[in-house]
Image (cartoon, rainbow, N blue to C red; front, top):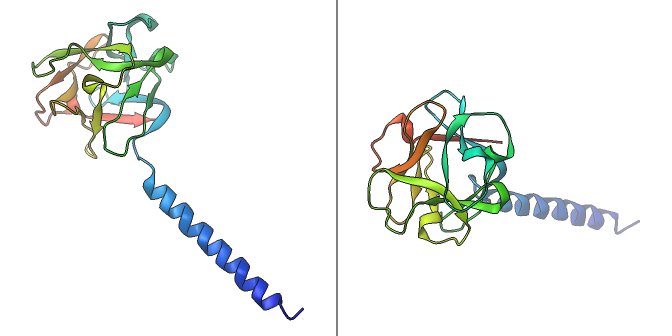
Length: 168
């Protein structure tokens, strides 16, 4: 019975260490990484989601915005990254891809493509809701708040068309 106070200290120390470890883990997690999320442009007040055209999963199928309907072609996984170079993975494991190897041109369309995690599939997420292609620094942009409006890469212009909300 004499060792009982020591056992209490050991328990208290264990709980304290566990609390510290879980707080470190919580801070180390990437706040944008997520599984089975919807990505909604700010324009349209949450009525539109990033959508893979016709739920097709072949290379080159366009990505656009369409009314949210919570089906697989609007569900995405954002990969975790220590260097803020994420990939957005959609239906059948296809990645959101900026078309072509030169993303310097404004209006470059997006598509899904087999994941290779090259620069044209690497994106950074800003706290203000902008999603930028890492190589060019340009923003993803929903052209208009309507079904079938293209998702393109363009110069960041500080407009609502380039701001997105991620929802689980």
